[in-house]
Length: 415
Image 1 (cartoon, rainbow, N blue to C red):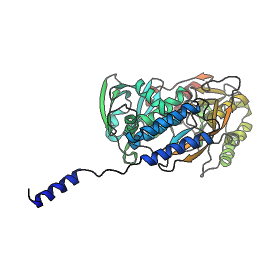
Image 2 (image 1 turned 180 degrees about the horizontal axis):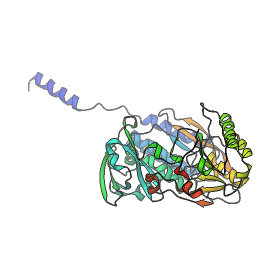
Image 3 (image 1 turned 45 degrees about the vertical axis):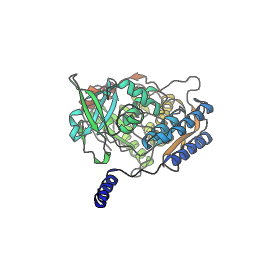
Image 4 (image 1 turned 90 degrees about the vertical axis):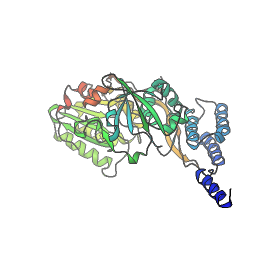
């Protein structure tokens, strides 16, 4: 072989062989130690559910495994480590990983596709039953290790975001490759089928919705607004959606409260519905400013058959606290399903960042004992009404129908 041929061969080999990436091992080890030190120092009581010795053992095991792990695997192991604290308010935030182009939701009758990329639109309405041959329960048991939770409703509320992330599934040993997975579904006729889904960046997905916005029930509308109301004239029902315990820049809490109270005073209101199903918390004190004026304007609705507070698995933290305080201070009926929030819990959170990865660690600084003489896993509604997949895809809200049959068939003024 002449010199020219040898150079060509060497160039071809170099082009075909990727350069070795510089190791992040030392940086990850620093992050993990920083996490362990700061969490123990800052959390009000990090070792309530796991001993400090057991936690330290987990930390050292992770540090020893780092050289054998890819970055996405280290992140998932960090999620597992923090979940061992056993506090649903203490968690790790990261940039959303690439995901497959479907959204899932857990209904009373299973886990279903509620939104999909236009190219996968036929999956909407299908029930997920397995991933890469593993049954859904096995997948859920593995996912539970990375989700800080204190009850099953919150686990099922949070699990879908991880189920669509192949990086997470791969790091947990549930699928063979981080780029794709084979999802097994059951269609509405009961027929099973497989679909290989590739991961992609969410920004590139052209989403297709199950049903148009105007056909959705109230609780599925305007989720981007922290608070809003609609008046259902024929039923004389004032429906208030409270989606976040947080002020909006476009409409302050006090402005909204005044507007709501004025509306209540100028219209016949036989029922008041406060919907907390989509509210995962924030500032628990805002509820007083939001609704005191309205309650003063509507003293006659302080009755179990006229004042309803809707709760569900998405009702967490401050929203769950609001549900408890309203139930204790008024004659409201709690309706829906058990909350994702646990009444006796750690909370009042703060955060710190890990220097290398930039991961945000949220931790609790206070213990709340809202029901000191008991320790229930959830707030249990007075009237339990679950939403099924049939309800969802038909655009029905069985909770509102239970409050007043056929209440949602007509519309009124809204804000």
